[in-house]
Length: 426
Image 1 (tube, rainbow, N blue to C red):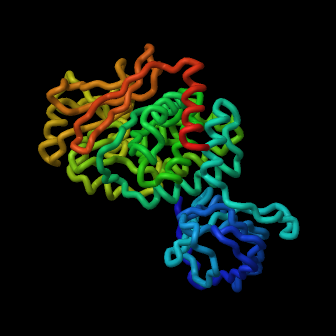
Image 2 (cartoon, rainbow, N blue to C red):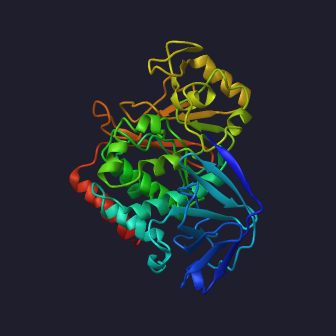
């Protein structure tokens, strides 16, 4: 349940003792409320477009409050004398000041203010990427780095539309399901997002051994290359699903917060359109879809509902044995036939449909035949019956090819990682 609290009559006075370049504070900032008997220290933990509130208690006594402003390292925090509108959640929320684009990250301190340690420099995203690459299969990153990573990634996804409008050339990646070294193979072949644009179609987590590594690396790359890598949501980017299929257990094993990741998943875009001609979504079509602005109107953050348009876009499947809509054996959503796809193309003017969601033996499949430009793309190798993985490479005119691969050997895994680290000077 979400409640909104208007704090327009509460003014937060921030005294900055000293600043240095890159938005990093040398000395503590003292935070005081004129209306409440509170006093806290403020730490600059990260430089992001926004921050998120980790937890708000009704009667906090000591608060550590992190401030960041912009990803432009030339800007500095000079002072804030504005009111805040705050949205509170049952188990967390956000505190965002629109005029100055400041978003506050709040945690509760159990210790007296005098014991709060010195300020630390904001995390360098290259350092985080290097840690993720070198520590796969182990405790990937620390909990504080995870918090920073999720906060920063959230702020980028929050600024994106529910339907992304993208331009080719671009490489499209299907389900990965924790197959970290398939992702490293892709980056080894096509380069990091500074050399190649990417769209990922969801289902980053569950079933495979390295879901945490995949999502941490993708979040870090989104922070570093926000205009070159795009992620949309799959049906496994939901706490209702990923608590039971391996991701929650992996988070616990690696000492990370399961709910932090899912809060970011709740903000992911749902679909993408490339060159105004290719429609991309994780699952497929819905009998409830009559206008694209229905998708645009989805409110975020939100978990995936159990039925309806939102659910169908992430859960539905093609069925070559029917013409229109039919039941699904997944116990949710629907299946759809060739006529549904043709009607969709005709009504909305699309020429290509790219979706993921189903394991296919060759990594890609045209379920209605090649005359219908409708593709199922699956990028996790050896997921079921030794299937191949594949990615779809689109040029500027939407001419496409597929790069298909088998499960990597142990030697290849090392080579992929070392090649990425060397090539990107990490």
